[in-house]
Amino acid sequence: MAKGINTTLQSVLDTKKDDFNSKAPEEIKTIYDAGFRAVEYSGVVKHAKHIGDIAPDFKLKNALNKDVTLHEYLKKGPIVLTWYRGGWCPYCNLTLQRLQQELSNFQAEGANLLALTPELPDKSMNTTEKHELKFEVLSDVGNEVGKTYGIIYKLTDDVANHYQNNFDLHGFNGDESNELPLAATYVINQDGKITYEFLEVDYRKRAEPADIVNALKALK
Image (cartoon, rainbow, N blue to C red; front, side):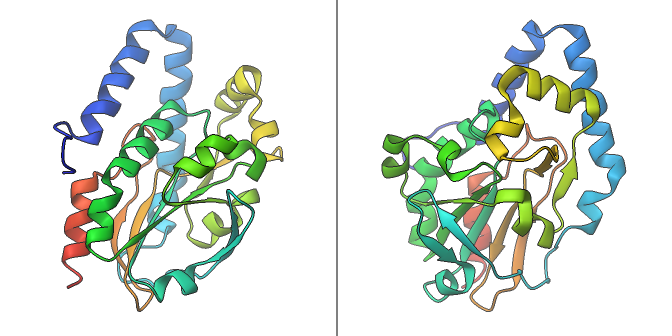
């Protein structure tokens, strides 16, 4: 755990979830619960890339509109590859903040962090945020890379309508597919092989940074 951080990421996310559950209307909670079940029944976790698979290469634009490729980054060291749904997702924002705090621990193991989002580049974060983050935020428009990793699922109509009415999901992503990535995190070694996976249908659960560090240590 990073210096000065005394709580797990999951405990922070659970606090957010408990706050939501204490305030949200029962109708919304029912819609979300049905959404989680639909993702589970879709089989997306089973069909995703897993430990031992070769990570598909990609080239995407970062928050400053520069090309970033997986294979070029792998020349520098192992990669922590993670997806987040968007800046509109409070659980994603809490996770990104913690990853920023934990980044030095990943770097101490020689690793770099790449975070992918289906949001359009101009929607992913504001200019100040782009310059403050010390890791790459890449726009996977249309979830094209996410699809090669097998982690993309379609929202139920009820959840999609709720998102669209509340914050304009289509505007953030630039399409009307109503598709999002799992809360997925991989560690990829310099040979391009996946050596750690975190695949979860519930976006309120995320890879624990300490587990990521342990996975990186195991590469040595």
